[in-house]
Amino acid sequence: KAQDEAEKIKLTGSSEATAIEAIGKAEAERMRQKAAAYKMYGDAAMTALVLEALPKVAAEVAAPLAKTDQIVIVGDSSSGVTNEVSKLVSQLPPAVQALTGVDLSGVLGKIPGAK
Image 1 (cartoon, rainbow, N blue to C red):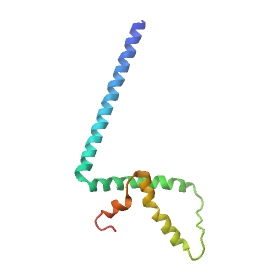
Image 2 (image 1 turned 135 degrees about the vertical axis):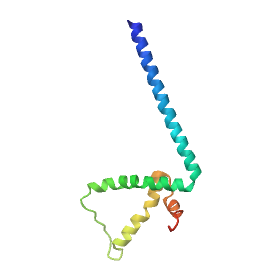
Image 3 (image 1 turned 135 degrees about the horizontal axis):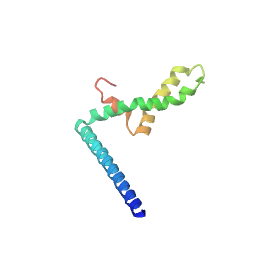
Image 4 (image 1 turned 90 degrees about the vertical axis):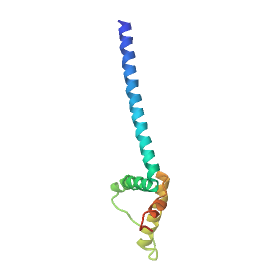
């Protein structure tokens, strides 16, 4: 009886290992194909990847703001809200690069018509 149980455990483990191996191979092949596509299309693929990731980054950045009742910008009358907003927006590309490793300004600069 113990031998039957051991054989059952062995077969279950073997089946699970085979399934994990198949999943790993499929994931590796998917990554290989994706890498080949990025290599083939170069900058266009990188731009597409960044543009695809931006909504996710924006959602993560905005999530804490959804819990905020008010935002108060403090400054003297000469600084103005426009300057404060400009300052916040100017910090976006370095933040995206820190989070994703992608130079947002560089990528966006490669889009035809973008400055």
